Length: 183
Image (cartoon, rainbow, N blue to C red):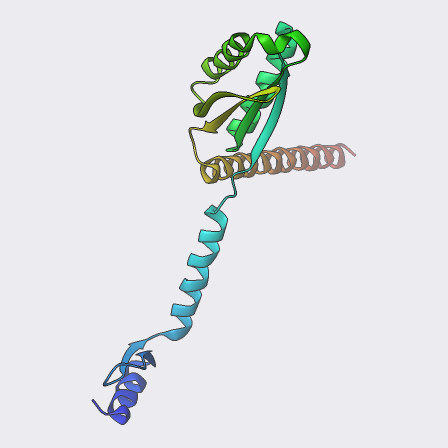
C-alpha cells in the first residue's frame, strides 16, 4: 500500500499511522491511536516498577547461651523481617569453649527454623564459618506481595481515619445547629 493511501485511511479513521518495523522490506506501519498507546505503555511501566521489589538480606546475631525471652525477642525480629519479604541471615557467634559444641548451635538454628516454618523456608542449612555458624531463611511470600498488602492496609487505615473525622465534624455541626436553635 502506498504511503499516501495509508495516511488517508488513518485520517479518515481519526488514527495515527505508526511505523512499526522500518527496517523490514517493505516497511511495516500500523494504524493506532498513538497517544493512547504511549499512555498505556507508561501505565504498564509504572505498574512494573511498583511490583518490582528488591529483596534485602537482613542479618540477626545470636549467642549460643541465650535466654528464652531474648530468644523470643530475636525471633520476633526475624518474623518481622520475613513478613516484610526480606531474607534473613541468622548467625550464631561462638566464643571460647562454645566452639567445641557446634551441635548445640545447629539445634538452636533448627529450633528457630521450626518456629518460623510457616513464614520461611531454610535456604541454606546451618554451616560452620570460622567462629560463627550461619543459616539463611527465605520468606515464603514475595516482597511485592508483602508491599501490596501493606499498601492496602495503609489505605484502609486512611479511609477509616477520614470516616471518623467526617463523622466527628458532622456531629459537631449538628450540636452547633441544636445550640443555635435553642438560642
